[in-house]
Image 1: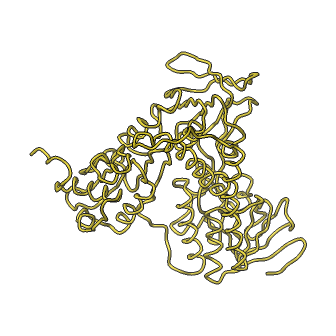
Image 2: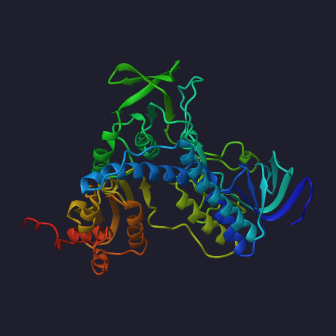
Image 3: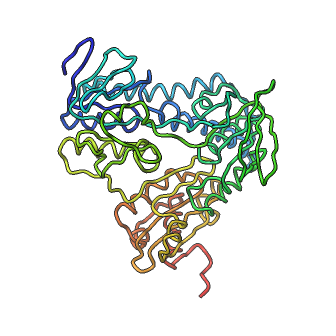
Length: 471
């Protein structure tokens, strides 16, 4: 690597140090590549670590602790009413984030990977300009783009300030009344956090239902538990106007042809995310994005230019950190001359509400839409011993299979620890498992993991812990 005050040279440059970028850099370095990382943020880890997955789950845990303390009375344990030290909670959240970010920096340093601070922009097929950094540019042979995504803005804001997930996770305050625009996973997770911390929360969603990704039967169970914590949930509702008030914000909502104005202390906009492909100078490379602003790639992550790869939120597919990390390894291995491809059969998805929802493979809705024959086995958590010992019997597991081969097509679940249980289902899909593979696998008793075995037994018609099916 040639050092200089103006430009540097490297074999591989990775743009972005999130769960895609830093993983790609580490894997490539381990395979013998000379690697530079360019990151415009002060700290490493990307959106997921700094202002997404990690801080949100830290705050979700705090809200769940409060809820658990309040719920303990039903099993004979009473606590004083929980109090909230907002400064201490902020400090705890920040310590988690900072510790993990420093861990990423240590991993890169241990492999001799230099991090250049600044914003990268292509000047040509093998040249980058660096804005706001210690160097003016980088000459490279190969590149991996991992620039992530950003919150989608609200078109009707008209200068009215509002929170995105980034600001909300900084915990500026606990609003007396919080309006959340967007009933997807971000809106529901953060809405439940602030409701748990003491806010009155109203959710406004444009679509006919909340949380469009998982099957409706899973969502309905979750919403039955979650929505009582909200002051109001308005579906099929569109924000048509915003105004700043002395107390906070006034939100005008249109529903069924009528308009209604809601007043709140704070507005949180959670209407999705946009890929960070603008301002990269892709036009200098002749690289085009699709209608959603993402870069088309092949199974290796390779763009139309053989030496340029792209991964994570800026390529087609779900915007998930674990998907980006898998794509990162594939791209690094491909650049190192190894046979590798992102040909995974299943990408698990999780909504970290309480109870959690998780699914992997095909949903029942997708199977029906494809007019594909299938059978499904559902097992309710109320029939599971471990769920009863924990006092958490809400939820179920469903397994969708091919009726002829018994091949597992998809698994969905809602309930306690669904985020942990979904990994077994994803492994089953990845290995092409059948119902018999799950039925013959001994699950420890009593555990929540038995719910997967029980659902498989229902699908196979051999259920023991449910009434016999009518013939």
